[in-house]
Image (cartoon, rainbow, N blue to C red; front, side):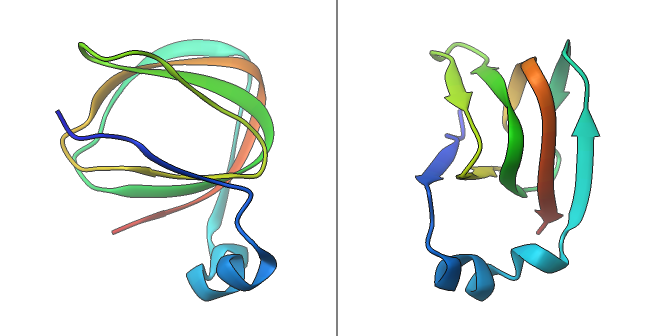
Length: 91
């Protein structure tokens, strides 16, 4: 199973290098849903909190300041525990 990659609190230089400020923004209320990735998503969390549980793997909690990569082929359940706002981009 593909693994979620999380970089905690990347520097402003790193965020600029990634081009995060030009990425789309997505908001989501507190909810739960299944999310299976058919392409790689890069995300930078601005607000909120999500608990992502990949199939057959332990849960991962993602919070503001986290840069996360959700690889193609990842199958997961998402539990948004605090109103979520993130920048995102697909490869």
